[in-house]
Image (cartoon, rainbow, N blue to C red):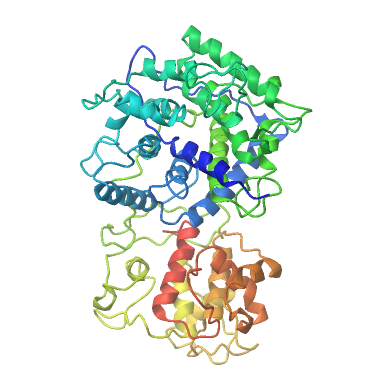
Length: 577
């Protein structure tokens, strides 16, 4: 079933409210130590399975959110999840988000929203996760609005919940807001949340405006988030009592399949919020209160998982949903951190600085031989990391869309120009030239293979062709010929890049049905050769080729700049840059 609009609006408001920062050392400041219960598995779900699904979802999320914005979908939630996970994301991706945030903040003159103060909280949490400071974004203090109590709680319970989570992520002091009629304090935010607790022990989005509403029942999402906010204040008797009532309420609300519903609809997000709440409280996900018929919360959450495509909102809801995927992903991160005994999701004293030192590959800022790449675990033992030798650029690529890829490869000696200061980006490439650059990219040692009668052993490309053939990267045009001077087509380039990707440890398996599903977006995909479709499909699925293309043009001669881009993206995906 499709998600109703009002459900999505509520969820967007909730998601927007989630991104907050830290808290100061006060009487109620929480310990930064790991608090989650350490289990070796959740029911029958092993850590190995959690890691595998987390990595698959991270890859999908990183690929899908290629340009993170200031937004509750495709923005801060992706930043938070990836930053708090063990997934390897280039710092340049986080730099992109921060640049977008600065530009947005300047455009809005520091006012992210006049009414919805959860926007400030969401951004604060994201910045805390990547080592940023919300108190100075392009000269604006984005934490200061949370010092205004009345304006922060205007949204309802979301306001104080996410203000506390945000302030506590990095132990920020409550900002003094001279424009506020009522200066906010942590005590005031805690009291506001407790005041809104319902008679059944839970919390809802609109309940308790004046006093706990007698006939209103709890919502799992809001109850879970309220517990996340209160988790660091369990030394207070009133908070502890409220927490126990809320936990009892959630246990009673939980369905027989261990899932949760919101507005009478079972969904993954509700399950996630309860999982995160338990982990923030340090309660084992194996706790008997939350295991129903031998099924755990994690079992239920994983029923919404779609391999290679994230998570769906409901089990009858069709394809993957980015909002559901982002929330499920940080739920996975919360689980992973609990299993590893690390600080919980929102205790960010261990956050790594992700901004300030962007990925400099191809920018001319590298030093000779410097590299942090390690490659994938499954790469062939002969594949080696190729370090930067000397910064290199060309006059004819300064304003070119593939400039970064060309410079990154040239600076490593992988690809050469056609003159001292000329790359000739729009020229075609021969099969022999391609063999050379792919062998260079993988750091393979040259060897001659006297297989092809048209490959003269005295030619410069003989060793490259022989090596590429030996490792299965290229094939001949026949049993005895290679056609070294023939130009390479797009589908041929895709095939060879995928062969190289497999050698680098990437999982390149793809069925013909999966490939056709990806390629069918292009009106001319039927012009591709049958043997090339799974290779083309993989390249588009892994963003080696851009899905922004309007047509496939599989048999068009590919340009030097395009091959540089394809190889650069493959190497990035294979952790060779």
